Length: 177
Image (cartoon, rainbow, N blue to C red; front, side):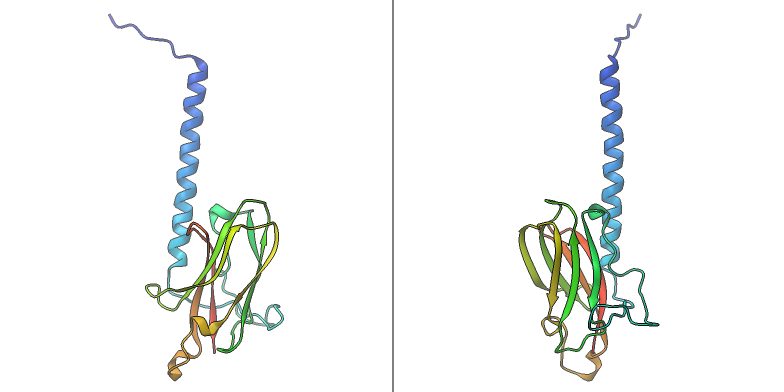
């Protein structure tokens, strides 16, 4: 005859809590991985922006650009997408980010690529915990775009913003003319 040992209710509660937490954690990391896979896809389309950071009237807006990764939702946001966009080869791109909670982002790095297998950068490096508030990211197109050959002007480049641990925070495309 088999005997059963009664399991205390607190143990059952703990077990359920661990299972639910594990399931939530797995789905968040799957969502982050999917977001990062999208970030490493070929650049396509831009969100047109004026030199002063406003949207271009009747301009194109790429809904895929400048979204925030699942792991960073609520912690950081892109207030103003890359501008101007398109940008001249000798110009400068600015991105205005807002860090919304202290300790949410540890370090920041920015890379660019035209082909996913050929990243250029880091173009920008910020070490340490980011303070809350606005951060303007300045990027020089000459550091990642080629000036040789007429075919290179007007090409699209993907800009990817990472945290200091290499997790993708956001991405968007720019056109260099």
